[in-house]
Structure formats: structure tokens, C-alpha cells
Image 1 (cartoon, rainbow, N blue to C red):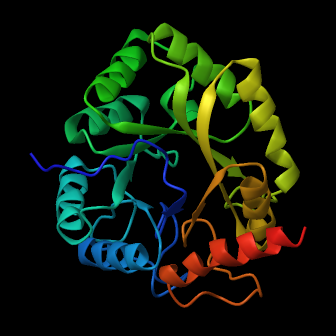
Image 2: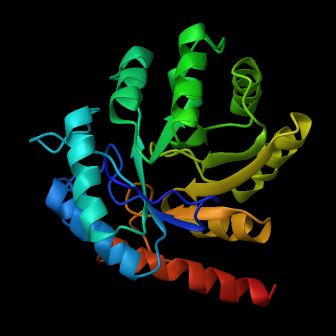
Length: 265
């Protein structure tokens, strides 16, 4: 078994280079093959990314939840970036069932995984199977990042944590601000997540991702409020000046510019 790097704390800067939807027609540098994902991961690590969140694709370049492809990608990334945190996804995109999401997670047992909690538990009532999967992953050392599309998802997360008898300390979360379909990413939508964390006494290590031209304002707000950030072509191919980034690693210039701008606030 490979000895994957597993950080104690959520990495401050994560790159999401491909996502489930962006294709080569959207940007020629969207990585879709395993060699492309590995090459991009290495370049992003060398440019400051501490973690990579990747989606495996089939021969047509389409998003797939495939344990074999996930394992192969993890193995190849481990060879090139042994000190980078590696995170797979269970994103359903309206195509995969909760059963298929759980199956992938348990078959791969990755170092890191993102789970959209409302996708995994659409009934909003955690089942025994949900509890078993979360306990299994946690006990086997997989770092789970809970994807929250709205503050109400934290109600569900709190319920799940309690039913699984898991700790409410150091809970990794990703707050998704906006949506790829055009829902505007508004930085004022971040504080309600933090209020909900307080309501449930969840001590979260959290990050934000956002979309299109509003991405910058949201990332800036996240840093200001003590959060962490994720950038990459999954969410936006734009730079602060509105120009298209030539590569994923170019997006990693954002954190420095955001931190500098905060000094002058």
C-alpha cells in the first residue's frame, strides 16, 4: 500500500484543475487524461498548491466515478508529488447514486475525498449505510472534506456527525459560493456558513471556492475571515483582470495578490 501524505490541517491552497464539466473545448489545458492530471498536479505543486482535487474522466473526457481510474491516478500522482495532499471526488452530477458514491469511496480508500453531503444523503436523513461509510473512511485515515452548497447543509452534517459518533473538531469543509450554471458568487454568502457552524458547535477547518468573475471577491472574503481557498479550472478560468488564464498553475498567482490587497484594506 502506498504511503500517501495526509496533512493534519486542511491545506491553505488547493487546486481543482478539471472538475466534472469543463472540457477541452472550454480550455485546451483542462487535464482529462491521467498523464495530464499528473503533469498539472506537479506543475501546481511547484507553484505553491499544497493539495489537488481531481476528477477522473473516461475515454470521451467525461466525468466518471471509477475506482480503477482513481487508484491509477493516485498512484501516478504519488510518484511525482509525494508531499502533495491528493483528493478524489464523489460528485454525482445527476448521474451517480448515493450507493455508487459510497462504493467508490470504500473501494478506493483514498488519502483524501470530497463528499457533497446533500448528494450522498438526498433524503437529509442519514441512514445506517451513511454512518458506516463515514466511520469506515475516518477510521482508515481518509481525510473527508464535506462539500456544502448552502448553510443548511451544515444541519445535515451535524446530524451525521452525531449519529456516527464522530468528533466535531477539525471537520474539513468546502463552502461552494455560487454555481457553474450562472448563480452569482456573492462573498456575503460566506458569513451565514460560519454562523451555522457556531450553531452546531462544529470546529471546522474550512475553505471556499467560487465561480467566474466574482471568484476573486469571494476568495478575498474567505481569507479575511480566516478561511482557506481552492482555485483552478473547475470553478473559473479567469484571472483578476478578466483575461483567461493560460494554465491552471497561473491561477496560483491569485493567493499572493489577494493577500497583498488585504494589507491595504
